[in-house]
Length: 549
Image (cartoon, rainbow, N blue to C red; front, side):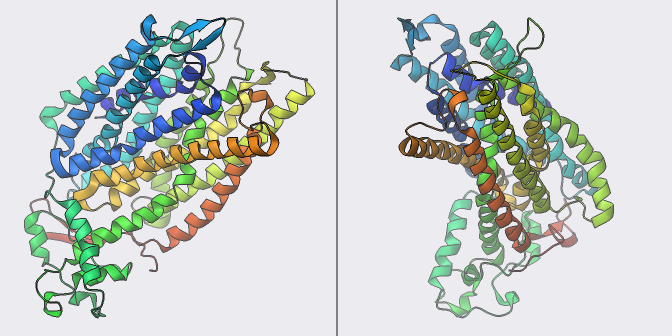
């Protein structure tokens, strides 16, 4: 599974890392439309996990959904290689004006969106299937599972680093067809490595076929019972005995004092007309858990904008700066993103081997930090990074004025000025990437784990889409007010500093709202039983803290 994740991310980022450069240099699109296209495509790749989660949880299961997604992704890879290699699919130039035909653009977009669909269906299922290999009912495996999401992020970073260090260089130096061909080979290795583990994989049952119907039934029954008196004691609500869940191999979720209106769905049948059976407390709490995660999800959209900026604005900004290392080598602008990944690779082992044990001793918490506290640290570092981004861009614009740089000349300022913001965002991602994946997986109801992982991927998608919207609004607003876009094609005659300042302000405001929300968030509580389903080990809260309702 680890090798599969490394190679799959190598293949994906081999396509995505330099895509904005491919669109501007090979397809001859302008910067705003290229940034918007990349964000929309990337957003699709991060929203289709919802489809993959639904198919896996309701129909095919994790393994067969992964298999189906691998086939779709492979088809997209082949199409992309053909698009970048065959001359008949490349734009033609006349009088030094190059433009891609409708057919060429159609095939290109078909290939990358096929990759987005396949990659999207893979994302929630691969990580969830990997987590399924650990048995929560065995103490030694439960401890290992705490580290799993950190090392999953580590392997993701390894594949990403290889793509941003080597593939982008191959693409710019030796050709896009060869670069995308190497990506396709990486994906082939990912597929082979996944299927080599088939004899030893653990497979969890889907525990039912109608999770969606069960989920939507709760608010319907609650609305039907809206005029009934809600018992003051939660024990008077309808719930099966714990033995029922033990026999079914499922977890019972205990009552929490939030979203109290939904509790009316669990009013016992003796207090209703008897024609419709009440929902159980566990069914009601499943809905409460999902609603609670949605509240956190909404506050992650703004921070997810940084993942869009890293692979769009940073790259275009880097192309304007001095990139030479010696007389014969020029650093690809997209390769600077590798410092984000290198920071993650350095910091994640430190976090897992030293920081977590240290915090365990200080807090007594088995994770070291509560999950939302970990996210809050990551968001705080992002705000600091936004301030640095603004400061560096102010400096770049000052150099342009001092040196009287005109047109699209290279700014006499080394690209390594962009290094601090990349390192800070890499440090932020150390807390965020594994933390978000762990939070949404852990807090999801047992029968909806893949959907929970899709919550994580959809936050990235929402960030991409919202960043596209933000860029479009800034472009239209600035053009209307000043007659010239702040985000024009000539990066030396723009105001990216205004864009970064806005990102800093909304990120700081979002952080304040998140800190308030995390104090009020109530973590899921459920029973824990032995793997043989005979004896109760203990009933515990997923997190030691229960916030106020």
